[in-house]
Every structure is written in structure tokens, then in C-alpha cells.
Image (cartoon, rainbow, N blue to C red):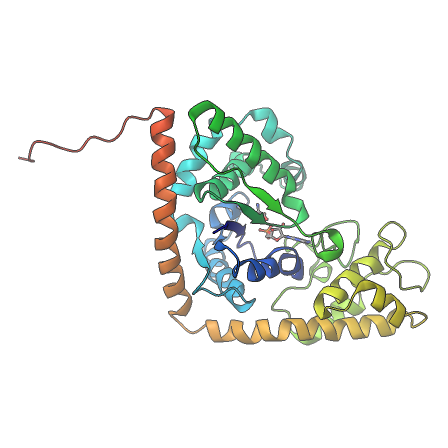
Length: 337
Ligand code: AMP
Ligand code: TRP
């Protein structure tokens, strides 16, 4: 059976960008593959975090996976830091990754420009992501378009280490939806930027747990393009195109059919209907999330997830240690006095 791995950072709330770009595909893939979905808390530490918030966001991210339809009885859901092999393999990978490769990463360039303090963790972040994926001998990685470059690096490093040390890792493929299918949901305030939970302006994103009235308000205040035509044209009409993509994914109605239905209708009516479609898409997620907040429920799921994950992770690490020449830890033969 095919193996799938993906990770989501617990850095605050999740947005409909995370949902439409990645998490929704988790729910599709879980029935055809052996899936590992990881809350990557070590990645979140690459930028400053409040410890209490990080702990809470970690559990909430796992709850949101399940509320979004990931079934913990078929998919393995776990927290990255609960399986120390992630950090360990990351080091072995760092020693096979070139400074120049990491320096070229566009996400590093963007984030290091935005943050005053740039940690080495932010720089080596892609090596940790490669470790996440390669530990599980992953075939496919469902992510949004913004992760394509990190996936390419993961493949390059896997191929390099396989050539150098013998077959260690499966070389994974990215599973990225096209833009019209959610691969890149844009900010509601600037359609040239991707929607991001770390944006300073909360009107730019819709969080999965935003109450209906907040969703309506955010969509009402979303920027639009000049003219009044509702047409999918990412070059000329990036804002309306983004709203059409969200509408289409929320309802399952094709973009062409929406264009036809809203011909001549004006932005006001279109936005009001879109808001209701997004409210309806998130309603079941919000309801299930509340149920999962009962104490002990998510903890049980994460405990068993970490157990399933660590078995596979340990096998891979043992193989890499041996191949790279790390001497095995000897067992005592003499009894301890
Ligand atoms: P992150 O929140 O950065 O950990 O991202 C988790 C997943 O959501 C990754 O697969 C991202 O590629 C995906 N993602 C994040 N933002 C967007 C977006 N605006 N559009 C599509 N996918 C996204
Ligand atoms: N870097 C990814 C992001 O920010 C999160 C991530 C970490 C990930 N490890 C991963 C995604 C492994 C897929 C596979 O979105």
C-alpha cells in the first residue's frame, strides 16, 4: 500500500488555505494509502512562540485534522516532537545538505526578511522537513503549492544519500492540487499574496474556527478587482478569481457554472452567497471540533499515533546510522557490579 506523509505547523489557527490546499486531500488519501499526518511543532519553533500557546495550538491542530474528516482509526495522527527520530534524522540529513541549497529556499528568504531575529533553525527547516518525510519511506506528500521547492530539495537529498550510502529512502512525490483546485488560496486583502495564518491582518484569512458572522464580515470586506464582471482570470482579476476558487471548492459547483450563474449579478450578491457557502463548509468542522475538546480524547489518539509512527521511524534511523558509519552502541556483556 502506498505511504502518505504530511505535516502542518501548529502556529496559530488553521485557515481555509490549509484546509483547501492540504487537509482536505488528507481525507481523500486516507482511504487509498497508509497515511501519517503530523503536527510539526518542532518546525513552529523556528520562529518565536509563546510556550503555553504552542502547547494548546498543537492539540488544536490535531483536533482540526479530525474535525476536518481525518479518521484516526485509519490514519496515523501524531506530534512531531513525540518521535525524537525526526530531530535526529534531521541532523544526519543536514550533514548531507549544502549551505547553498538551503540559501536558495524562497520560504527562507521571505521569512528571514520578515523576522528581526533569524535563527539557524529557520535556515535548516527544510532538512527537518526532509527528515519527516524520509523517515516513513513516503511515496506521496500532499501539500500546497508553497511547499514545492521543499519537496524538490527532499527528493534531491534522498537521491544523493541513496547514491552515497546505498538504498536508504524512498524518493517521494509531491501531491499538489492545481491553483484552481486549492493549491494556492490567496489573501482576501491582497490577492497577490498567499493566504497565511501568520498575516498581521486577520481580515486577510478565514480561520477554520471563525464564527459565521466573522466569516461574513471578512468576505464582505475582501478586496475585489476593477469592473463588475465575475470571471476567472488570475492575471486580470486575481481577487475575484480567488473568490471563485473558494466558492467552487466550498460547494463543488464548477467555476464555469458559477461564472454563468453570476453573469451580471454584481459583487455584492456574489460575496453574500460565497459567505454562506463558506459558513456551510465550516459548520460541520466547527461542530466536531467542539466534541473533540472533551478532555482525554485527543491525548489518547496522539499516544497511539506516536507509537505507530516511532516503530517505522526507528527502523529508518537504524538503517541510516549503520550506513553512515556510526558505531552501534555496544551491549554490556559483564554484569554491573
Ligand atoms: P503550514 O500552515 O505552513 O504548516 O501549512 C500547512 C499546509 O497547508 C501545507 O501543505 C501548505 O502548503 C498548505 N497551505 C498553507 N497555506 C496555503 C494556501 N494559502 N493555499 C493552499 N495551501 C496552503
Ligand atoms: N513545511 C510545511 C509547511 O509549512 C510543514 C511541514 C513540515 C511538512 N514537515 C512536513 C509538510 C512534511 C509535508 C511533509 O507547510
